Structures are given as structure tokens and as C-alpha cells.
Image 1 (cartoon, rainbow, N blue to C red):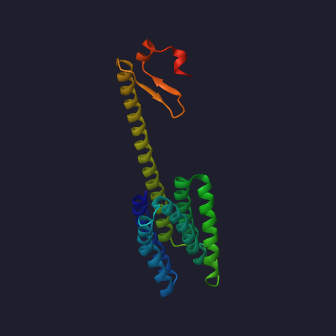
Image 2: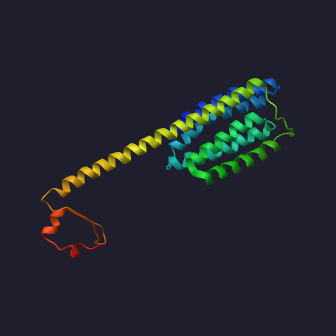
Image 3: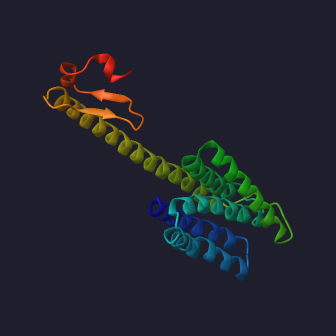
Length: 215
């Protein structure tokens, strides 16, 4: 999970680096904004990966990383004045990640983190609402969001197919085991720690009454 998210995050953040970089250049932002842009979208994904991989609970660390993504992307939305297409692409991606990994409740938490981050972004400088983006930036956001949703969908599809194959293999293994057990002369049974019988091979019927085997 951590490695998969690292690859997806790195690719998506590089796309954000290019898109937001064009937006910064077109609107005359200074060196401070460019420095934060590089740190956020070029350096940050690698730091998160190292944090998760060196954590005692890497999966939980990565789930927390997703919320941190939402918070920081919200800061960018607020700091840039909520450019419509940039904000849509970043917020929809973070909520999609949260929904896939944490369910509907996770998506709402991610949205809350994004709103909190937006508040921080607004407070960093004198706020001005600038929803417009150039045609180039709008197109990059549109196709970027579309491609990201498709990539996440493909990952979920592959995971579902893997689970389906594993389920089929378990069923086949159980069928083979049952075939052997029910045609063997040996006594084969499954009993839990409370002494309850869960399975007995037909050979038990030659030695014990059905009532002796419990429910």
C-alpha cells in the first residue's frame, strides 16, 4: 500500500507542479511561492514515503499521510485564491483517495482537513478571490483529474480482481480438501476451543452417533 501510494502521489504531484507552476508564472508570483511549490510537489512525496516506511505501523502512517495531503492541498487552494479548476482537481483527488482507503467517513474527514487548510492559506496573505485560470491550466486540470480518477479506478479494479482470484482459490482448495476428507477412511474433524464440532468426515458415522457430535 505504501509503495503504491508513493508512486501515485509522486506522479500526481509532479503534474500539480507543472500545472500550478504555469499558473504562478502567468500571474507573476515571486520566489517564495516558487520555493513552496517545489517543496510541496517535488520533495514532500519522498518525505512522506520515508516517514511511512520507517514507521512501526506503515499502513496507519500512510492513511495519516492522506489526511496531511488534504490539509496541505487546502492551503494551496486558499493561498491561490481558490482558482476553480485547480481547486477542483486537488480537492476531488484527495477526497477520492480518502473514500477508497477510508470509506465515506474518511472522505468527509478529508474534506474537513481541506477546509482547515484553506483557512490557513487565506490567513497567510491578503486574500483575493481569483477563480479564473488560463485555457492551458484549465485543460491540464481537466485531463489531470480525469486521468487520476482513471488511474485510481484501475488500481481498485486490480485489487478487486486479486481478491476475487484469492476467493476462488480458497473455494477450490476447500473443495479438494472436502473431497479427500469425505472419501478417506481416516477420522477427520474440526473442533473449536470450546469443544464444538464444526466438521466431521463421513467415517465418524461408523463410530459415533450423530447426537454425540454436537450441533
